[in-house]
Length: 89
Image (cartoon, rainbow, N blue to C red; front, top):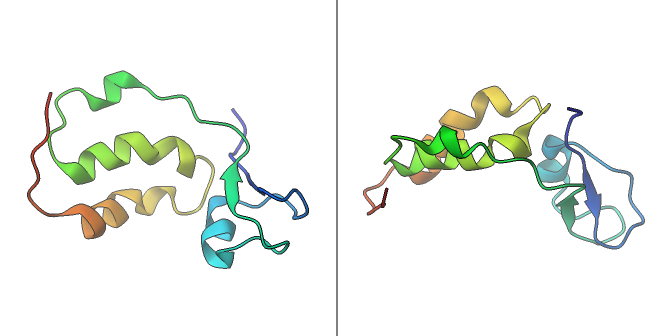
C-alpha cells in the first residue's frame, strides 16, 4: 500500500506527508489538511489493549503509514495520553 498523503480542504496545495502537515499546520492555500483516504483498521490490533497510549497507537498507525514519525508513534502516544482513564473491552 502506498504512503498516506494529506491534501488541503481548499484543493490548492500540494499533497504532503503527515510530518509535512504537522509542520505546516495550515495548508499553503489556507485550508486544513485531511488524508487522501481513510486507512484500513485492523480490529485485531486492539485485542487485549487497555491503556490509552496503546489504543491510540493501534488507532493511529494507519495515518502514520510511510511517514518518518511512525517509529515515534508509541512515544508520542505515551507522552500525550499517559494518564488513568476508564476503557472498555
